[in-house]
Length: 327
Image (cartoon, rainbow, N blue to C red):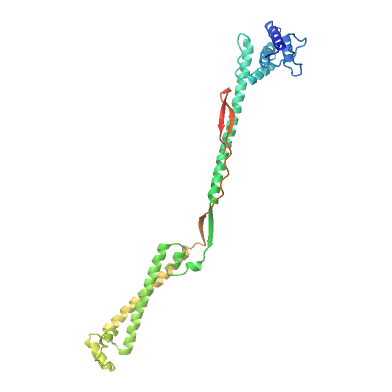
């Protein structure tokens, strides 16, 4: 409840303004709003010099009449200060045309527009800061996610040797992790070696038989090496071979065929060895890198979201309860 003296002081200022005694009204109102003035007593009596009113409603009413008196005496900036103080305490305040002169209302509207512009600018700046903070948080989260991705995988680096890559029979290809080429070169080279050994052995066997039995075919010799025939006599051998249809020309043909097959096998082997060596060296990589999963420590809990009271652009008098999520 307002003190009786507060109401008396307010009524005096109101009367002075109504009587257009604006100078006296401004001086009395200044005394009522001065923090250095003594507080009005709880009595219905007026103080000679005026006292400081403390009731919030009386303070706002006195400021309004003070603004009227200041504007009427040409002190527009001082009147604006009173309107700013009123709007700070009551953003929905609107001067009544029945009390406030038109010029004073116009002055109030200027103050309100200035306040709206300043509030809108402040809100927009705040929103810009929040947007920048969100963008910075997004980049930080992306950075942390990338760090977690990299930290969750451990890279192993193994030094490799060209000497191993130079080993034939597909070993170099297997060493370079090319399984298909490894199988191909191994198959070709092993097959070529097997063919070369087989044809070489057959050719050597035919030569050995020729040296022992002249131009006799070893296979024919084996077929005729049966009980009842004496092969200690060369003439008997030759007669037996001739009876089997083997002659020197046929033996020479077989030796030539075995020689050609052996040479071809050796050639294929040489080409495969050289090609395998070149391919393995061309595909060789000095280092082999592999990725191994690695466990990470658990994440700390996220901070709780903060709740802020924010203004609304275009309506500085309105406020809203904003939920600002911070991660």
